[in-house]
Length: 333
Image (cartoon, rainbow, N blue to C red; front, side, top):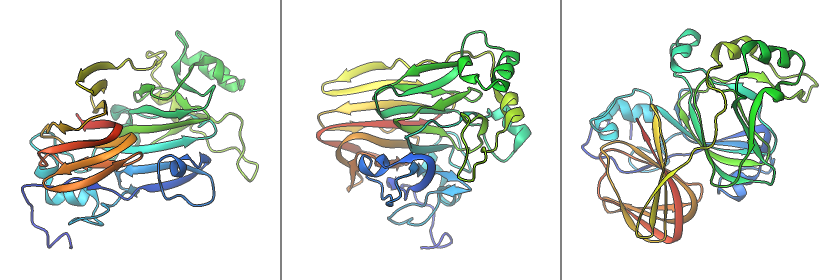
């Protein structure tokens, strides 16, 4: 069905997308072996973009009435059914990924909304949150600067090749969560598999790449001055989130984060329960276990690695659990 043929309707059913898989120098195989993505034999798959309306990395709707459409096309035709009576965005504001890091990612920073206006007015800033799905023993992340580190000190250590001494570093394990606001210097350490929730942006400035060379023996490009322009030197260390927990029977809800861009809740349940409609889009990201989502007489399979977008107009959704299941509920704010 073409965009011109479809008329705006009062209700949209839940939407599944075709992931965009990306091979990287630090990728591995866990996107396939643990998260059921259709990776190839290469063994270097680093990212699965699950839901993306970024103009250079679109994930099309996988099936149903709008199969092959992008979110921007759907928004253009039927914004109220997707967003409800809340905020309106011509580009869907959130991007969902899984990341498999078998090696450290570069030390990097993302611009905020205000800085981004100076770099590219067509894009937003990039704040992001990580939920750790798996981590080998000794895995760590770098999140922010040690207390009191100044721009002058960071530049000196960078020139000496010992920038790691300025960074706030800690070990992580399965279940840990961290919020990386725009302007935070950060890196994912080796051995980490995680789910990422972020603003719809792909602007990254590399400050340091751990002295690594590419296949041709050359260092990857760095963006040192752009990075320094973005770093928030007032922020200091960024620690793990401390979830607020509440339970209804066997259904446990953890309030992980409420930021200016998105809210994240983690659900764990051993029994079925209704999913409350918020008159806003809700994104479900299954972390463990399996079950089904029933909505408007339709059933959608849920399993580890599955991502679904429930439009604001969808109602009477019920989660059925096979044994136990853990998933994220992500809502734009």
